Image (tube, rainbow, N blue to C red; front, side, top):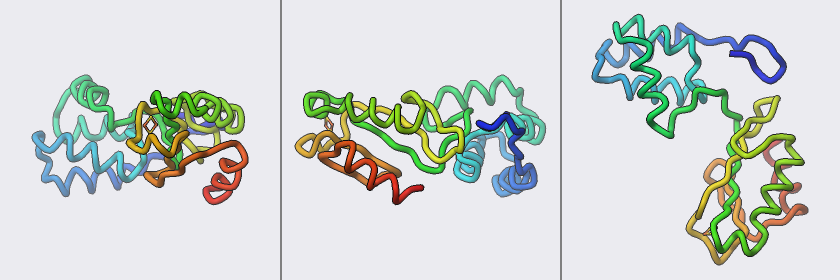
Amino acid sequence: MLNGRGEEMIVDLQAVCEIIEKHGYQKASLIGILQDIQAKMNYLPRKALVQVAKSLDIPLTHIYEVATFYKAFSLEPKGRHTIQVCLGTACHVRGGARVLNYLENRLDVKSGETTQNLSFTLENVNCLGACALGPMMVIDKKYYGKINPKKIESILEKYQ
Ligand code: FES
């Protein structure tokens, strides 16, 4: 896997082996192993999945089936911070789409993508359960309401 600068990303296979060992080399622990790898590396690198396949004697194709079935897993590198912009009805009428558009231009990514420097992953969601405060944005589970471009700039400064 290449990062945004076209460099090969280094995968800590020692850490992967330790995770597999912690789970006792149990095939039944596959999801737990993948969760731990994702928690450590922020995504599931191919090299790590190959190591899991070898260590557990599971076909790599089966591991990919599991990894792609669960939305919590990512096969692409994720940013250190995840920004979610709400496009639910209440936020939409209050300018949610404009907020998303502003962030796409500001970060030079589309929704679902990660910035080249791996700082941010931008996503859109349907309702964050705080409709009265729309438009809503969440960064790493911290909620920001009634946002606008000016507010976004001061919020992003905290995460640079
Ligand atoms: S529609 Fe955005 S929080 Fe509910």
